Length: 241
Image 1 (spheres, one colour):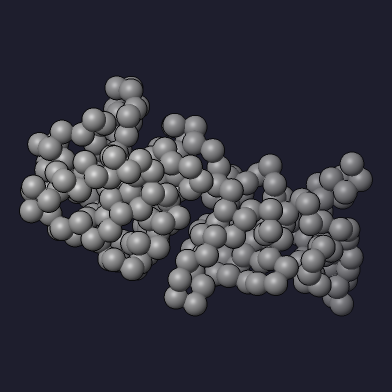
Image 2: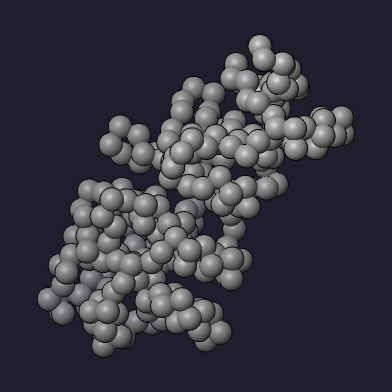
């Protein structure tokens, strides 16, 4: 198995590398953050990612969520120092984990039984562990990954199976549902239509388009997004306040 080690502590990475080498596993790379883990996964195409959860910046759960969106994602095994109660949550959702300090026998069993995480499993773990919401969205751009700060996003707009993420100078397609984005970022974005969420900080006012429908006027873009009748009273109230 080709294994990628992700941990923000160098000594922890060295110990895992030593154990894996003794088991005949091939270590194809190391990463010290969630951001590095994403890029290394693209570059090295590992079969398994040993993923620490608590890391500065992008945590392991967030990185795992993005990795699972790749065309051929590796299996992910979390490494953690959680309490017994939290570990039961991992077992309930059939997620492999290694409790620090990691024992070689446990590592060998986890590697052989590695399974891929679903997006739903990762979301449940995030909610149960009360992990902070994301500060950035990971997007694919010209064959590589780019992290877009949430504060730079003007709106999300759904179109069939994709969602368009709009900033002042770029548009990206992401494979996330509008409903999930609304639940995660409901303190920053407001729904104006069944197919659109807009950043409250970028709302400038209301207007009407050529067909007479009410539209939201946004800072940093000339795009006019239609407001549904259902959401219009709420938007008017929010602008008034």
